[in-house]
Amino acid sequence: QVQLVESGGGLVQAGGSLRLSCAASGRTFSRWRMGWFRQAPGKERAVVAAISWDGSNPYYINSVKGRFTISTDNAKNTVYLQLNSLKREDTAVYYCGAVEGASGSWDYWGQGTQVTVSS
Image: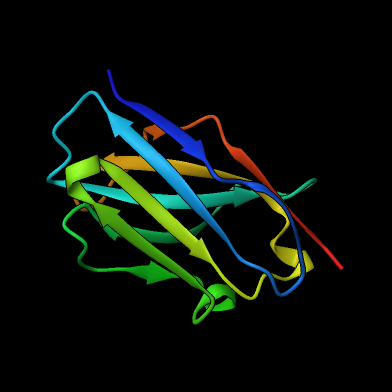
């Protein structure tokens, strides 16, 4: 059974930084793709960044390029999202997602972690 557990969210002032972690368990993830998504109030959940488990093929939405960094630590079975230069519009619940293979539907989700950016 795949389990994804996020941590690291919190309240931060605009311009600040946070690091989100997603601990994955239940499978060998070597051929999986991992992603970070976010959902703001009144909006749908949407991808923020994604990466293959071996650290290749990172993807970012335009609004976070240069500010956020996604990475993996295979030894710890953990995916990270470093959030720098945070803006109020980054406020959302952040979710870790996983999909087996390079494409397909995101079938596995964590419980989410709240990121709140104050002005």
